[in-house]
Length: 124
Picture 1 (cartoon, rainbow, N blue to C red):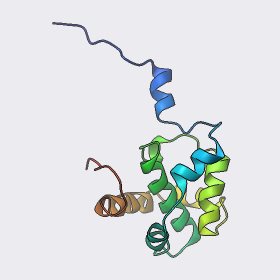
Picture 2 (picture 1 turned 90 degrees about the vertical axis):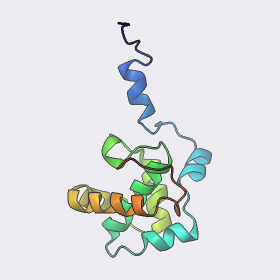
Picture 3 (picture 1 turned 120 degrees about the vertical axis):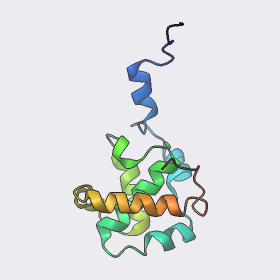
Picture 4 (picture 1 turned 30 degrees about the vertical axis):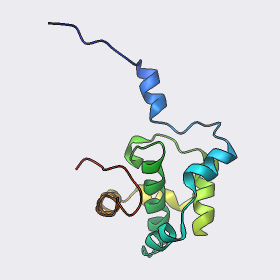
């Protein structure tokens, strides 16, 4: 039996799951700008922290294509840009992070509407 070949180092794998801290303004706009339709779906959530959390989950699933739970650190510039579009304080994300059940509900909502939100199919 052949020994499995390691294609990426642990550091390289982690790098694939992170947003680069030196992400350019162009890349932020390219990857994290919401359409009016996206904003409509995001704004269905009542509290600022729920809207911001839902938006961040959606944005991260688009790029770098990982769920929020897998991302260790979101650059301040990215979080500020997302929050600015929703007109909420980026600090609201701290409250969202405390509510695991809401995060899971929002992930399911995104899964249910993934075709509309232009996401790749997520595994359930």
